[in-house]
Amino acid sequence: NTALIDVYCNANQLTSIDISKNTNLTNLDASLNKITSIDVSKNIKLESLIIINNEFTDLNITKNTNLTALYINYNKISTIDVSKNTLLTYLYAVSNKLESVDITNNKYLGVLDVASNQISSLNVSKNPLLQVIKVSGNILKTFDVSQNPALNSLTVNNNQLTSLNLKNGKNTKLSNGYISLYTNPKLYCILVDDVNYANT
Image (cartoon, rainbow, N blue to C red; front, side, top):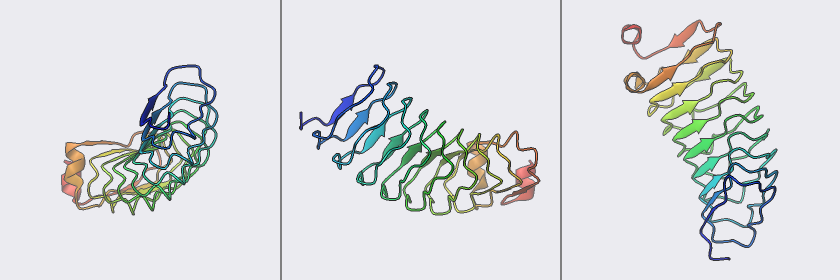
């Protein structure tokens, strides 16, 4: 049906799905299946793609320039190109095999959750609207959120951090929100807006 706008086929035993003729599709949720690949190149109106808990090893979303929400948690994806998805607001990629992710073109990104991957370096300086960053369970050695004044939730547990730059002029938002840094035994330096305020 070419008129289909929303497709929800989550929690089945699907191994494949063909949506190439559903050119008006804006929302797809195919989570909790056994799908290994999907062709979304014809679905240029797609705004939300949810494929949590499948068997994906890669995903090409370069034609989906209207995408605002991407949920790819619990797959086996090693690389993801979101450079063409400039409207992206939500990016959830927990528990994949990502070694890096380039979000420098995603200036509207508000939530980034890439916990439990193998990321060693992550640049969030071009994402001023980020409110939530979750990067726990990676191999980051340094992390800098000094260009993220909207940040109110930061989770960087279980990395290899030696330094963390929180000096964004808005540390009070973090005190009202959430910050978690545990299991970073080599973390010796945390830059903040106000040392006395941070200690308190």
